[in-house]
Each structure stands twice: as C-alpha cells, then as structure tokens.
Image (cartoon, rainbow, N blue to C red; front, side, top):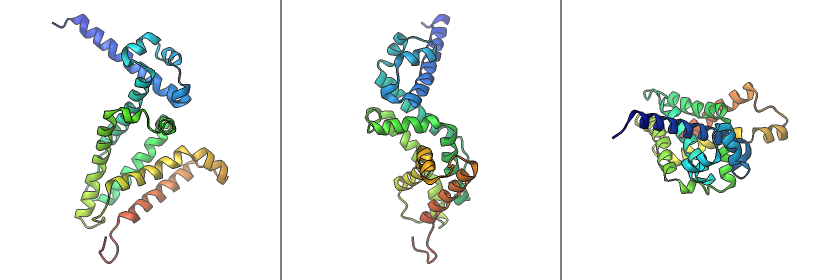
Length: 218
C-alpha cells in the first residue's frame, strides 16, 4: 500500500531524473557523445555517477533518452500551435516559421542532431519511441496539406515525407552550417535581417512546390 513517504520518494526520483536529463542535454550538445563525460553530467545535475547509472543504466541509454527528450519537446511545442485550416497557406507559413524559430531558440537541438548524424543514427535506431515521435510530427503537417488539397490550393500528389524533408532541410541546414557558410560567403547569416530574409524565401519555395499550376493540373 502506498505511503506518504513513497510518494515523496517518487517525486524526488522524478526530479533527480529530470536534472540529470537536463544536464546531459547540455553536456552532449557542447561536447558531443564521445566527448560527453558522465562525471561532468553528475556535477551539473548536482548528483553522482552512481545515480546516473541507476536511472539510465549506461551512457548510451542516457544519450538515447536525451534524443527522445529533445524530439518530444519539439513535438510538444508544435502541438501548442493553433493553425487556421480555413487558410492553409497561412497555416503552412506559420508551421515553417515555428520550425525556424524553434531551431533559433534551441541550439542544443541542432548540436545533438549533428552529433547523432556523425554516429549515423546508431543511437536513434535503438529507440522505438522515435518512430512514434516522427508520426506525431507528420500528424501536425497532414491536416494543413489536406485542407489545402480540399480547397484546390495544393497539389493532390503531395508526398508528406518529401514535404517534411524539404521544410526540415531549409530550416535545419541554414542553422547547422551558418558559421561555416557565413565565413565562406562573407556574410553574417546570424543577423536578424539575414534570418528573416531566408525564412521568407524558404516559405515561398515550399509553397511554389505545393501550389496547383495555373491550368489546374497538379
């Protein structure tokens, strides 16, 4: 039978796990998976190595939980968006702008995904939860496209996976490579003007590919 003390202990355990996960996200985003040290995570979490292994079993499992957590946080934030499906063009612009701003506000998302790509998604493939999370992301996009198709605004042959990849690439690539590209091109890609210009361009490019042609074919 549960006791008041067991409830307190469970709450304390949840708080400890949350602190460890937050610290691990910071360390892995700064140092990568290989460079991320359990000892540093322990210090930031005000915990100890033993507690990390108790709750997460291994460094690899902790990193997998970080991956799941950053995707879940992204999906949760996106789910709070309210799209007006009566205007699917404006709704799609809103969704693209959300993705764009989320990357700006959460640079750790970019860093950790870069790290995981270096490892060829070795950790992601071990997480059944990520497949479910990807379904949620596509689920937010699908109603907008379906509304546009029903109104004859968007083409009937839209591939949701292709569209998701297009939006992700236009937003992600800019942020993940802005420093090297900025140095190569001799421009400040992190400036508000450069960012706003690219967001407008990205929205226009996505919509150009979605719209029905003037003769009604699509």
